[in-house]
Length: 345
Ligand code: UDP
Image (cartoon, helix red, strand yellow):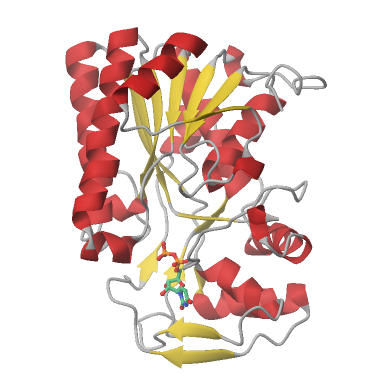
């Protein structure tokens, strides 16, 4: 589908947001929802994705298949499509894998982002919205976690994301780049039209795994520890709807295009839910008993990660519209129960 052909019936983009916008990793989970929102708002959009973890079927705009680390390929895309701005989602994002294979994370996250920033500099493209993460905070010293919380990541994954935040700050200072780093809490849910959703290989995230049990695709859900210092003993996380995340990217880009030079903010709802609460809510929504079994803790899981702070509201005018766990699970359930092969069929 081309961006221009799908802009019919569009609603205005936030604050006069203009394109073309090049979305690196726009065929992935959060990227594809953001592209869908850009297209819905009538913003000319191009996806640049190597389809290593993204899906062709998730591409909601013109797709250029290419590696972010391939400077020549990337330059060609910039020359051909002349983007005004970039939204950058492409990254390796498995915490466990980053511990066993950090080289891959430093190369694909940090080095390839450097390649992207250099191509942007060469082409005079000055605005970038970047997917950062609450993993840059590391072990919380206080909860909720606002943006002034110390950033001491414990995994190579979190470290690579923080390195990129630092690169963006230095490029802003030295070269006039305008950059937003959006620190997501737990992205979850699916598009309300049921066509886009979460599909990682392998899947490690709680909500899709719980729903796969409800669909009979897995026998049970394993609860990683019930001896945490939380009310029911299981870990608490702040789940945020992927369509809310998508809207925040447009709002951030609009602020950069209006001249704001640096944005660093959390994207979360301020609420947290335990693993048991997620499983209970999924039982209600799916009508399936969802067998669960407690096993040992997973290494590196802090007991509670919940966002605090008001920067997203103050700087971006952003507030979650589908912040309730029930809403998130409802949309995820619609996606998983109707598209049993996820984005692959
Ligand atoms: N979790 C679990 N069983 C699973 C997957 C996850 O108990 O099969 C827990 C995990 O320990 C964490 C929470 O669910 O406390 C959310 O994990 P997820 O991997 O979805 O996101 P993360 O917080 O690691 O980014």
